[in-house]
Image 1 (cartoon, helix red, strand yellow):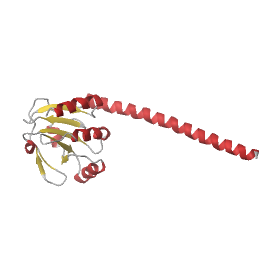
Image 2 (cartoon, rainbow, N blue to C red):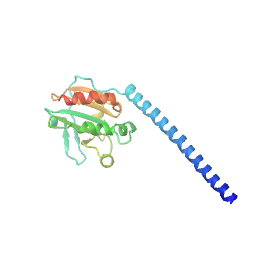
Image 3 (cartoon, rainbow, N blue to C red):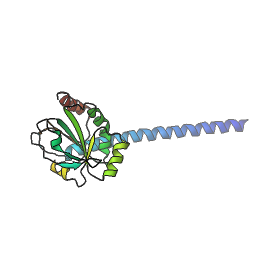
Length: 188
């Protein structure tokens, strides 16, 4: 009987130690995640530049995921948010919930176009896996990204209905910045 009690105590002790180790590990992972997120955001802000606000949006012609040609002129008279992203970008993954919120604002005066460098099949799989709620153009060779002077991703460029750059957002959107982007879009 004493052996049984000792065995039960040992099992409880082991379970307690395992839970303690798991709690410490979770705490460590959360702390690392926050540090990584801050570093990614800082890198995004420090190193990304883009086309100047007020400049006219350069024309481009890219295929969508079905091979249909998309031109910037297709959006004349509309406000257009260009989202430059990559399928291998951790900051882009963090930004996807914000993109969904912005996509919910789409209407006949506002449209979102994602622009992704890479292979169409990889981009299509990414778009499906993450349920991206906007049209996507394939910038296979990165020329459009260069044309818009994007040094990194994610990069968001809001074009007004006249075709001029109205707002540029480098890196993942912060909660405080989400309000600024939504305010700009709600005025459209």
